[in-house]
Length: 135
Image (tube, rainbow, N blue to C red):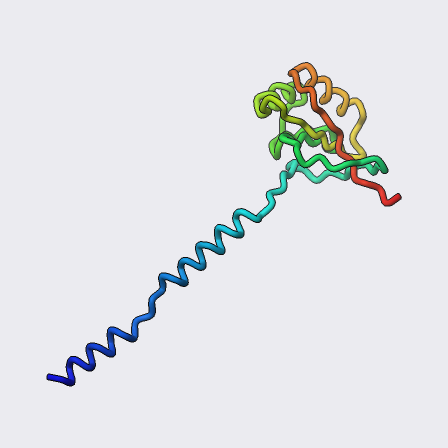
């Protein structure tokens, strides 16, 4: 009878407690989620013009991209150029800003029309994106 008790006692003590490991894994998951920086993409590949006076605008709420063919994209989805103002105004909060990423090869007329549509929709804070030149 004594032997059975000693066998049962050793079987119970051989179990591994996984609770601390799971706690560590969840804490690491939370750490990586909190420290991850999310980058907004415009939805289309844009070759921005260079400027020596370019400054970063991390507070942009909505990105509007103008492709070399004249297509307009708002936060990753294509939009008709005449509806850009309505789409962006619906996405913005009170003090939201818009950054227009116009391709170097796009026409100025499309850029000006997009800016006019945004102004007519009541968007006041509009910036045009440029990459900083190495001067």
